[in-house]
Length: 476
Ligand code: SDX
Image 1 (cartoon, rainbow, N blue to C red):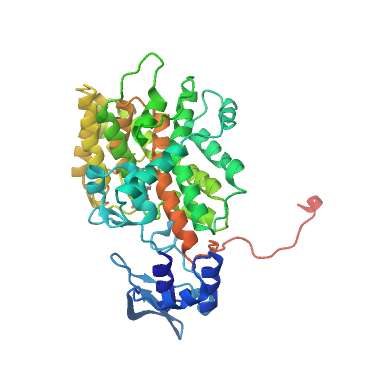
Image 2 (cartoon, helix red, strand yellow):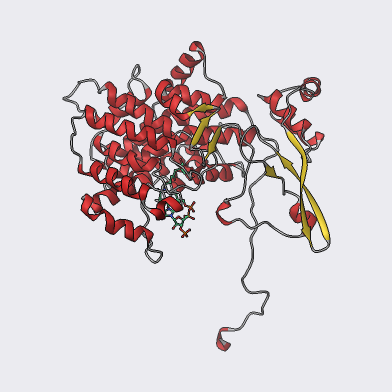
C-alpha cells in the first residue's frame, strides 16, 4: 500500500514537496531512502486531466488544477484559493466539497450505486460475511482463506473488555440511553490503550482497529443488558461475530437453544449494509477528530456521538417512532401533508438522503431482510409493516417526494426488522454504530496514511460586529 500511495503522491502535481514526502516515509518507517526513490518511480499514477478551472475575480484570472478520480465527479483543487485571492469558498453542509481522497467506498447517488472497495453492496450482502467485509474495508482486498481465518481469530481474541470497564455501567441509571453508554464507554477505552498506541505506526493502527471491531459488539450488548436490568453475558469463543452478539444480548440462563440461523444471517447482512458510507457526517467527524492526532478510541466515540442525531444514524429509531405514531394506514395522508408543509418541522423519517437521489440500494436489501425476519418469526400482519409499505407506496407516487427525489433510505425498514428481532428502539442506532465502527476505522487509517492530510480547520463568513470599545456597566 505504501509503495502505491507514495508513488501516487510523488507523481501528482499537487504541491507535495519531496522533503515532506521523505519525512512521511521515514516517520512511518516503511522504507529506507533507497527504496523511497525506487517506489516513487512506480508506474501507477492518479489520472490527471490537463485542464484547470479558471476563476475570474475582477480583472484577475486564477487557475486551479482539476483532478479526476477513477469514477465519479472530478475535483477542483482550491487549496490555494485563499492564498491567491484572499477569499474563502462558502459551502455550509459541504454539499459540493470533497474533504479528502479515498479508495474505500464509492456512492453514485443518481444511480443508487454503493461499492465497498469496488464490490457492489448487494453482492457483499448476499455472499460475504461481516468480518470478511470488514477485512475488505480495512485492507482493500478480499482475504484468502488463511488471512480470513487469521483475522477472525484476532477479532475473537479481542472480544472481551477490561474487567474494570464493567464498573463503568454501574454509573448509568437503568433509564440511560444505550447510545449515551456506548459513547462514554468507547471513549473510556482510551484510558486502557491510549499510551500504547502510536497512531503513526501502521501495526499499532491495525491493532487498535481490530480491538475496536472486536469490542464494540461486547460493549453494545452490555449497554443493552444494563438497560433491561440483566447480567452481562461474556463473548463465547467459537460463535460467529453476529451470533456472538445476539447471544450476548438475548441469552437466557434457562434457554440454551441455538439462535436461529435466519436471524444470525439477517444480523450479518444488517451489519454489512451499515459498515461504511463515504464521507457522511459521522465519518467526517472521526476524520476531523483524528486530524488533531487524537487517539482512535476518542475519535470513534466522537463518531458515535454524531451518528446519534435523528437526521443521521438516529433516523432508524425516529422512523419506527414515526410509524408507531401514525399507527394505521388511514392516518398516512395527514402525515404526508405535515411532511410537505414548509412551516412544519416534521420530516418523514427514513426518507431522503444528501447523496441518494434514487432508491438507497441498502434499503432494497433491508426490505428483503425485513420480510425474511418477519416470516422466520411467524409475524404475519405487523401493523407497522403495513403502515410502512403503504407510506412508501404513497410517498413514491406523490409529486412532492418525486420532484425532490426523496426515496426510502436504509433507516426506513431497519427499525421494523430490529424491533421484530427483539431490540428496543433505543438500541437501533447502537447497532448502526456497531457496524459502522469498521468503516470509521478504515477511514481513520486512510486519513493517517495520507501524507497530504493536515489538521482540519475550516474558516467562515464573519457577519458579526467589527471592533468596538468596551462600555463600563454603569454606562450600559
Ligand atoms: C443516514 O450521509 C450519509 O451517507 C448518511 C447515511 C450513512 O449511511 O451514513 O446514509 C445514514 O443518515 C441516512 C439518512 C437518515 N435520515 C433521515 O431519514 C431523516 C429524514 N431525512 C431528512 O432529514 C433529510 O432528507 C436528510 C437529512 C437525510 C438529507 O438532508 P439534506 O440533504 O440537507 O436535504 P435538505 O434538508 O436540503 O432537503 C431538500 C428538500 C427540502 O425541501 P426544500 O427546502 O427544498 O423545499 O427536501 C425536503 C426538505 O424540506 N426533505 C424532506 C425530507 N428530506 C428532505 N421533506 C420531508 N421529509 C423528508 N424526510
